[in-house]
Picture (tube, rainbow, N blue to C red):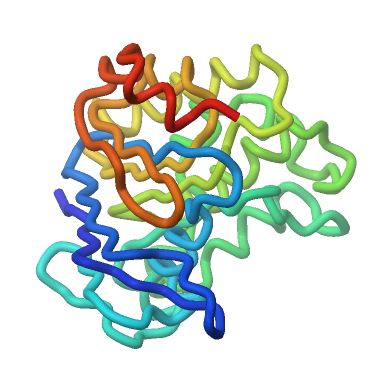
Length: 233
């Protein structure tokens, strides 16, 4: 089981600083959530971890391996799976073809679609030949998670997975993440705004405001008025 650690990470877009000395640990076999209002740096944190934007200072590690300046594909090979905000599936490819794109970081002998994906999201199995763009928003989110799982991740990152999703599929996604944690020992880092979802499934939370971590604690802290004030619009 593998932890993900950010240690005093700073990130800039030109002269603008998006992350300020951010330290976060996603513990092995646990769901860690980072919460905050729009524009506080949550997606910048994800970009830093996956390597799509280089950090200015600090360190990011998967287990004992420091990621340094390694590109996104190298991080995927180390076991980092990513479900981006907005899903970003390939709309003209079939569901099966979308899942096959998860083969990219894998060795040839590991290139198969895990049956676990269809256990968690049975609707995908019945839609393998359907184009990704023809799926509902919730089904596309399930497909995006399935694509990430095809890469056999040790650490799974999800950026706003409940955004624009109907309540029934939000529950399905929550159950899937709990299964991945409890039965597969996966490390999960979740960026979210939906407090009830995080309260229900998270083991540990961080709250961000203006690019900084302003609170860290158990998920039950989301009921604390002092914590809630950082999350109110």
